[in-house]
Image 1 (tube, rainbow, N blue to C red):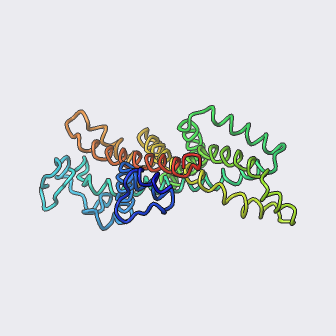
Image 2 (cartoon, rainbow, N blue to C red):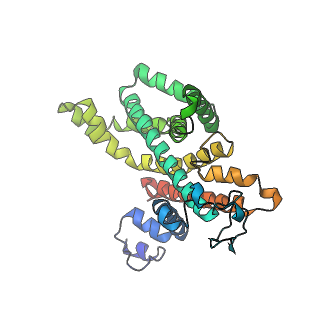
Length: 313
């Protein structure tokens, strides 16, 4: 055992061979370390956006139309310096990215949380109880899986917007898009949890809990659910990236967040209008941040899937 550890990839200073498999896997993957570092920086940027930004780019009192289309790394007509340039309204692109990143991350986290709240309990009940509820739930899941996620989100978004009074549509746009993405993504949680429950409920510890009179709720929440947190965590991580991309796609199509509460997708949609007129920076920098965010989350999610798989240990 000792020789096999010595022949393994060298661990960084401070890491021991006796550490957990997840920790060792992280120490041996430079790519995942870089992705985790990029993700951490982006998350910190969302938290401290008001402190890191040069000004609030969506406060009209901070804007100067004379600085519109200022090129990157240039001084505006006044005292304002634009490290990533300015858009058509004279907004600092760097500051707009920070605020747009904050909104994209918020929507992604909230949509994943909603999918978890819906999918995990339904999967637990369907896998444990079986019967007509299991059949009905899986048929609903099968029907939803025949449609692309973006199409389902568009349908839910359109219905919700149609039900809201016109004066509240922009104010409620953030919550509407969270519900649209969350309702379009619960299926994978329900199917994964259902399959895992069908395996777990046949094991001795569940049968023992039933023999001593534990309630079904206690068996599901205190015995079965803790044993499937690893796959749920992996799905949630990857779904976070999918939710961000879905929100950006909807905003790019003009049916997502309004310009008054922009996300990275909204900024990309705005920048696309000026790409062929020479103001390339309005589109390029938000696109690069979105790419870095989605790629880093996907890399961390793929690593978690392998690191938490006992068959690969």
